[in-house]
Amino acid sequence: MVSNRTVRSTSRQRPAAHLTWLGHSTVLVDLDGVRLLTDPVLRDRVVHLRRRGRVDPAQYTNLDAVLVSHLHFDHLDLPSLELLGHGMQLIVPRGGGGLLRQRGFRRVAEVDAGEEIQIGPLKVCPTYAKHNGTRLPLFGTRALTLGYTITGSRKIYFAGDTELFDGMAEIGRGLDVALVPIWGWGPSAGRGHLDPCRAAEALRLLRPLLAIPIHWGTYAPLGFGRLQTALLADPVMAFRRHATELAPEVDVHILGLGETLRLDAITGGDPK
Image (tube, rainbow, N blue to C red):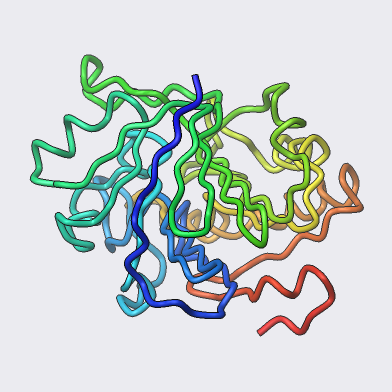
């Protein structure tokens, strides 16, 4: 079923076309005058995880909407969403709205894969993701797991959390940028996630002009000591190696925490 919805854009028109990685799966998409934030996790500590680096609050102001991929604590962090305000427009997978409304969020749109949402000049389309997104405890809130394509002057794919699936090739048609998860926060990527090699295989299916690795290098468990350095740094180096071998035609751009990439860089412009 395809549904058309319109979400009013509230930010002022701006010429910028930028992507800013705020850590883990949190990316500020600033495109065609619209500012979207994916899976905001902005706190220094989430459950047993400690964050490397801080987020500048100026990097998540004047937002038009938030895209939530699924309900796991490292993707749907209620205190982080509350930093954005209870009037923020939230786009969430079908089944997740009740949890947010109970916490006082007033503008919650639940979506399924295959729908279309118009946010200003941008078309946002939820996509299938292969991942169990049930929120703990075991019998907690159940909801879909989604990715999103964002289409305006550029087409951007935010994969959320997912394993490889056949439909990736279809998502990749005309794709400019893929925001691809490559790890997680523990000593292994874990079931239902892309590791560096499978993330490179995803690039071979998606065939974007540019890939930016996400879901790495931000949170690590408390008490891991020196192992934290390896957990936070090694996956992205492995991803670059595998991507060079499996998808050499894709330009891989690694962003540091809080770093911004200007999107005209993917057509030979000067990144800034």
